[in-house]
Image 1 (cartoon, rainbow, N blue to C red):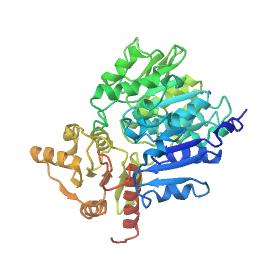
Image 2 (image 1 turned 90 degrees about the vertical axis):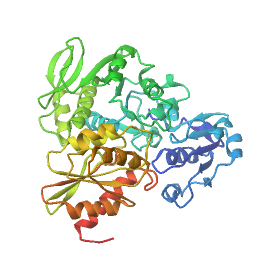
Image 3 (image 1 turned 30 degrees about the horizontal axis):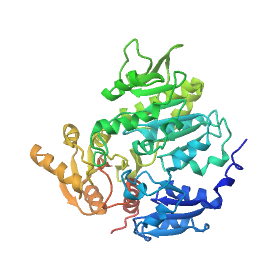
Image 4 (image 1 turned 120 degrees about the vertical axis):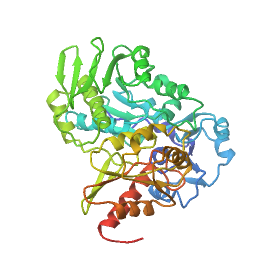
Length: 465
């Protein structure tokens, strides 16, 4: 039975979508309600020229737009306000609303089928994508949505009651749930926890507490997968009400169930015994990405996917855009797009994924983060090319103190890429891994990654500018 006939009550409802955005959530919420006859207002502080792609995607619906500002009346008079995760929860406009929901909370209120949910600081998108890719080998109708820029509202109507849904959930999306009890995943995954979003959170503890929402409503029949290699992961091991399973880069203590890496291979230790759970060869670079695949393999095994299908599917898994994404080779110089590296630790992981001589393009906007985790590895680069930004100011100070040479800061990505390419030699790798957010020079990390790939494509055909 599908859900197509359960939304008649939405006709005539006054809905304000706060934060139309460019990545799917606001667009799908507006489309979801407009398609069902609700009176929809979409409001965003950004101007129409920036939001043009989103407005174009909704051109077939009678939606009213308030752009470049918010009008208090749109919140006071609305029956329902749908909040974008990027909107701060302390916004005074939200306090004017009778009821506030998100695309995730609306989805969870209507879909009561099986959910596998993933959060963490880094590795979320690769992990959810690999889980979904593996599930498709057994469940062709399995769906993937959430923070990965696919709103689950876009496929809600098409779901059968037992269709497995994989959700990537950010700390903001978890914190925005009006009632966290509506989220009860059969499998909850928390990948590594690193300092992140400290421009929005008062401290790490508050950030981590939002992550913990993912498992709070689980029971012993549910599984919680955690990252054993950081102290927060070991804390989750004892605090989850679900049955815990650990993932580690090295063998686990005898009393701990889960999966681990050893000499490049991935093993799982479950009640049925020990088994090699990862294929011998995968398409992803770096030990950190192999750990993401290990999370996925363990989740799939606990879901009941046969071992041979897990190994086959993960051997074929192509990876995720903007995560150490190979962009091609020019004259023996290889290019990689790691725009999704938005914290310094992620850039450090990226650097350590290569054995070839490296030229690093990095920097951007600060999130009140510490850049010292980059210092032990950044000096391995044959060239460092900095992009302008508040984060770069902090990184530049550290590089100066450590007497590590660099070039820039550059006021455009194009200039930085072309300078790195001009100086690179055959056999070297150019890695774009910012370690910062993208605001200022780019719309978001996806726009940033696409711009990098466009520049590399222009180098391939010899264009200038």
